[in-house]
Image (cartoon, rainbow, N blue to C red):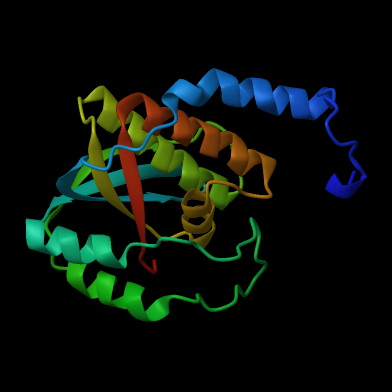
Length: 196
């Protein structure tokens, strides 16, 4: 219904999906906040997944390098699809992210965790599962009120997390889990794309 067709000065009954959305926003309103003073967590993380398993690594970086990487982290994402087919289009942001790869390659990486998947799924879904697992483990280890940088090699995950939404139901389900982890621990996640 167009706003021009709505009656003026008369209450409009809310029903169905609109009512559900309004109740949801009212319920989570106290949690809607952004901690602009969250301290940078001067570690650099990387997650990756394959059809059989996933894992995450960490590297300690200097505060100066962390700030440089934070400046080139993705802010808006790009148009992505869950399944590009055999030849995805070239990324829109290759120049800044190729410099990120050059900066992080010499870092000393340590494996944080690795595990095997119990059932198969789409690779981009598995990549996002790995990122959610990383945030859950960081929160369980006491990382709170922090900004973290994480390298991913999935443009789909980068775009979906940066935008906060996806056209895929499977990715949206995982994005909700990611949002819950971020809200519960006050962690802000910034992603860097690194070609695999």
